[in-house]
Image 1 (cartoon, rainbow, N blue to C red):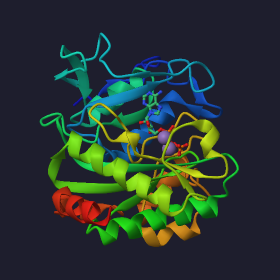
Image 2: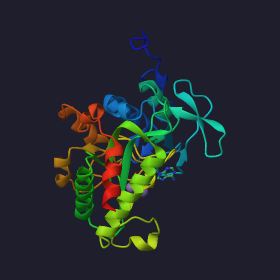
Image 3: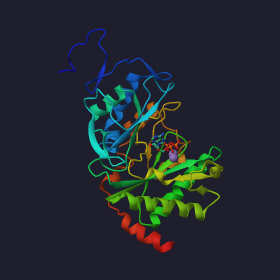
Image 4: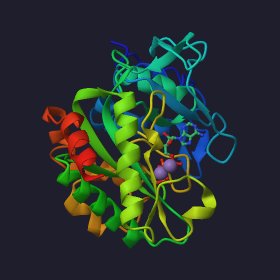
Length: 306
Ligand code: ATP
Ligand code: MN
Ligand code: MN
């Protein structure tokens, strides 16, 4: 087999059958491109369910995270393992989008310099219907972490009143994402209407704490409930994705009970994530896969209250 074939001295290493060129290139200070590929290989069983079959935006840092990085929605030439799906753009024209299906497709993207993975909230097979809502909690610089934690808990409690269970993850950055799975999936227009109404009602109820408009000046001392992650073509970072930020932080799905123990949104990194997954028996979000909850019911409740 390819695995047992003896290597020539200068042969580049491969991961999941993908040759990693420039394996020694520093992607983060002290972390090589090969180590990034090995990270995604190690977490693949946890990471892949969150991106498989979804249109995907990527953040590429071809010269490492200390140099220029750029977002990309469309495939690049030379890829062999990443499926492409044709989807309508705003203009009505169809264009190719990336759609990972297996481990090799992920490692091939890493070989092309991808650090971060950002899926849609919809499957490529039904791009017009959202199967998750993401409330992206974005604290202003002067907001302490404890308030971000309590904002996530408030979001959870208010969603619960509408009959919606939710899940929390760190972003590897400053905030948290509160994610609501939908089954059946719902039309984007409904999801947009709901997410906006929900964020607005939070800001109205606690104007000192929350803001639902993106204007920077209004955010001081507050947490912006960024509901705009919810739209056709909008993305949010995948669970277990690395972030191209200092310290190689990881976006980490949590059990709600764990949230109080964290020091911040970048509490997990490339190394501690692998160690954590060795300890865990199942994904903190494992219930999500079998959960049935519809937006229709929540829409009726929220419209009665406003
Ligand atoms: P943080 O907790 O630091 O806010 P985050 O991942 O939530 O981390 P945001 O800036 O709030 O970062 O962005 C939310 C999501 O919006 C991202 O995860 C990403 O999927 C998407 N996004 C942000 N900026 C861009 C961009 N320039 N191009 C495409 N998508 C973006
Ligand atoms: Mn955010
Ligand atoms: Mn945001």
